[in-house]
Length: 88
Image 1: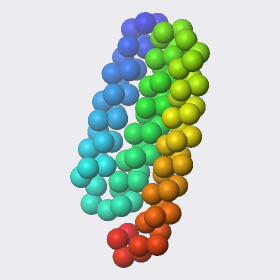
Image 2: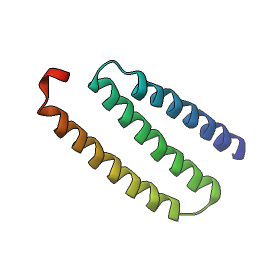
Image 3: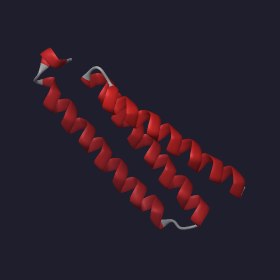
């Protein structure tokens, strides 16, 4: 079980790194928003895996707050760029 959780942590870190590259290189705003959403979801999953691995439920509360802030950030960025249609 510990090996599977350890491998999952490494896969989530690798996936977040690839998604972060998409944020930086993405040719359009939509690509960057998708990359931001993917990083947010992967960090949420990473926090959940670390919670199971450590046996502490407090990390799940941190993951929930992080998810809420990630969603609000995504909505804020989307609203900002919805008024600038020429960039999309």
